[in-house]
Structures are given as C-alpha cells and as structure tokens.
Length: 146
Image 1 (cartoon, rainbow, N blue to C red):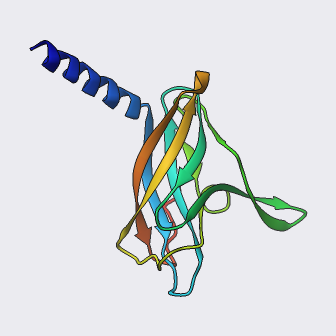
Image 2 (image 1 turned 90 degrees about the vertical axis):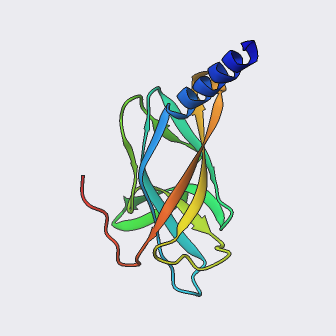
C-alpha cells in the first residue's frame, strides 16, 4: 500500500510539472515535395517565469528563430531563448518568434502531425521537456487573429 501511495504522489508531481507550461494551437506549414524547410507556430504559456531554451524534432533540425524588420528588410536569426513571463501567452507566429524546421527529412503533408520536443528552463536552472504534436496546415493557411 505504501508503494501505491508513493507511486501516486510521484504521478501527481509529474502532472503538475507538465501543467506548468501549456501549448495551444500548434501548427506547421505544409511543404512542397522538394522543400527543405518549414516553420512551426503555437501559443505557449507558463504558470511561472521561464524560458524556452530548445526544441527538437525527428523530422528536421529544429531551432528557435525570430523574424524582424530592419531598415525595411525582413531578417531572420537564430535565438538562444524566448522568455515566457508567468501567466502570459507568448505567440510563436509567422513574422515573429517561431520554430524553424531545417533540413527536412521528408515532405510535410496537410493533415498529418509532426512531433516537437520543447525544452523549458525554469528559475534555478531546472529544465523540463514538453512533447507537442503539431498539426500540419495547408501552404496557404493563415491563423486566426487573436
């Protein structure tokens, strides 16, 4: 009985850790057969101050990127982390922060899902992973405005 209580407590603790970060509306843009890159987008909210510090996927090399306008030119660059202020939804969206999928191993087809693993760092340096199944949307998909 004691082991069941301990196992139950550990399971609840595990759930609370994963509930610290919630991902909504995750999607990636479909690709044409020869494409080697795409982007993944989502809303991320953490219950406590944290940072998104990494991402990986079995379908491509994944990196955190940011697009911005500089001197009337759109530029894109790798970023080491994205701040996740407590209780605020942080958008990863076209034209801003996003997950860049490079060196795709296969075409991303509308209707399938792509697995991503997000690495979130909390205060004190503790890191957690969040597994996300990202829906692949059509090439022409435009997300609803929030």
